Image (tube, rainbow, N blue to C red; front, top):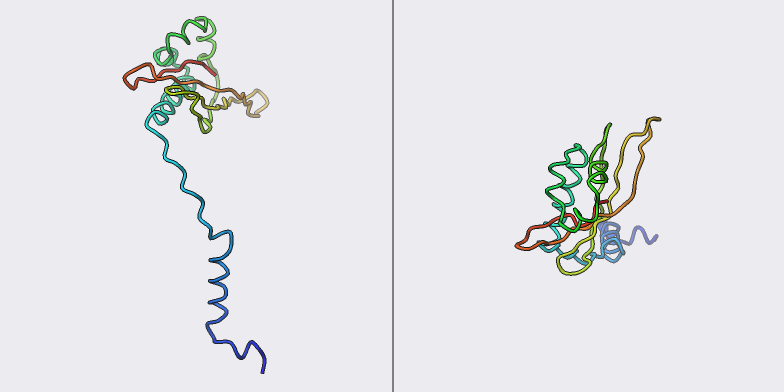
Length: 141
């Protein structure tokens, strides 16, 4: 008598189920911690600034800058940052808490080059809580 004939007809399915349960694929990863409300607000501020950059909207972008960022960047530098021609896009990476009320996000600014290839510029943006859960850009990318 062969071993295969001696097994119960459901045995192969049972063995497969047990092996899947015991495999590393079945191991659950620890749940990712939910971001705090400050992180969410800071991410939204970064997104709003980059939307203004994408559309070339200097006025909307200037409103989002902290007083420190306005002092650090010249008017020409800010206008140059927001003046774009051509299709643009951006990526915002997972941010990190630098200290309470201050987050940093890696960003990639993408624009179309003349040779139909995308030009990517890697940078970072710093967002701060200016009080009363009001978030502002403290460092332009």
